[in-house]
Image (cartoon, rainbow, N blue to C red; front, side):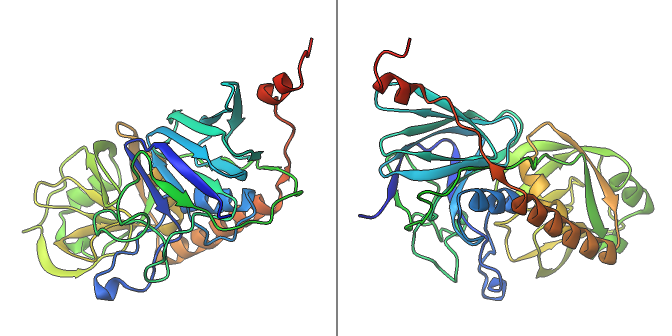
Length: 335
């Protein structure tokens, strides 16, 4: 029997995501993939999956998921978020983030509003099993591809899981904490020569605020205006995730996983890959500052970040038991 989950409450913005479909932007296909790749990797490791397995990316929270089969589950990308797991008798079990837990069929996982992040990940042993497209199961809603019919999840959706082999393995816990950075590091360019000196000093010296205009394509920022030398327009060229476009109004936009593949606005800088996961955790209203680094420094930081996450995964320890009140009541009188 194929293991499955049912989406009882999809929340405002929940989707199937994996590492994304790199290598197809030349065909106009967005790379997509999880906004917080660190949370996805950590969650997959906690439930015993390979790094390329697909999980659920949850923005803001407000999600309810019923397990139609026994499954190992882990919540990552948040330090303050908690899974509330309810059994058929109504008893609840609170499961903190950064640990895996084995749950029986019929349990319902509920996530309230995420307290400390804009995006969290739910990983399931085996991983979500939907048809891959260009080598990935990631959903890009703006392009209408991947995941469940190329769209965000809806109440009532049923998703199959791949088989897993976690039976008998210990549940794991990680001490690694994923938090947003107040300082986001960028490599200047490729069109930084199209801005005034004052604009460059402002971009790398002043604070900006995450705007409510935020989705998987981009993050608009409020703050001081950045002035161009002449015009904001250029001949369209290729875009990478993390590009910071500045349209004519002078307000920067950081392009995220589902960005368009080309664009005609000047790009003042590019957020380094090591700091892209941190962007996914920023909530509207949070303030950030940009810090300039060289390409060599960006590459070194990417390697260091990958090594740090690998060390975190190899230092998992067996998780302590949880107080399962539902199971206790089923035993009868526990006084």
